[in-house]
Length: 293
Ligand SMILES: [Zn+2]
Image (cartoon, rainbow, N blue to C red; front, side):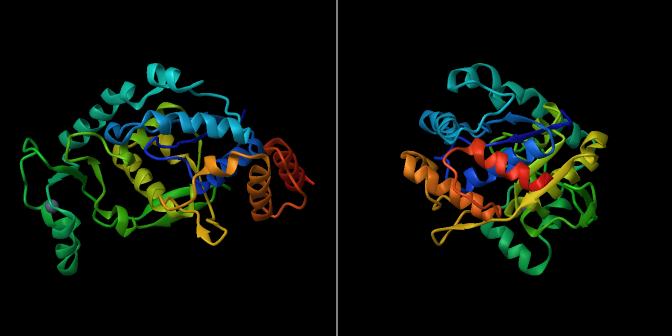
């Protein structure tokens, strides 16, 4: 194996077709690039975790025939051995280190207040200079970012450079309730599990740059070598398959043989593959044949 990649669903809703398309992309690239595939489940947000959604992840991967090399075998193995709660001390250590090194500032602004600041100045700098005490409750801890260029490597190993997007200019590493944010957990876990390639949709490209910036701030050399691949987003029957809750639930499509074939053939067509597929393994073989012939 030449590295490791992952799929990283969140058990806070049923998986939708957008998730499936992203997983299939990751799965195919893992085979193309000879990477191990890890199933990581992001359950840090315990308030939104439901057992039925956790079950749905395993059922969906099973019905799709998507096999991973490393990860939990089912919901109980996950809760016992793989939950993000097990890595809470790692997340806390990063937050404390960033705080001690003067790289964070607290901010209790509401969304409405932030949009007001945004009109006059970049809100990121609004609370930066105010030196609110870290000990006060109900504050996010945001990373100080002054508009530096951030560099990532794409799938081919070429360098891409950008400023952080507006969505993450002000990104926090700690939520108002004291818990670590998605950006921090994802960054930590990718290092923890020795991930070398991150595959995600174009709509999450900004997260790649945010996490690369976090890597720079922490001086994590291994994160500099991370390859990022951003796949395009597609529409299915007129519906956009982004990270939206309105996207159709995957379990509905995988519930019957004919619907499953319809989904596989849709994905195959999106990938430019000719032919009809009833199992993911055949689609994978056709994909690899196309890549290497
Ligand atoms: Zn603020």
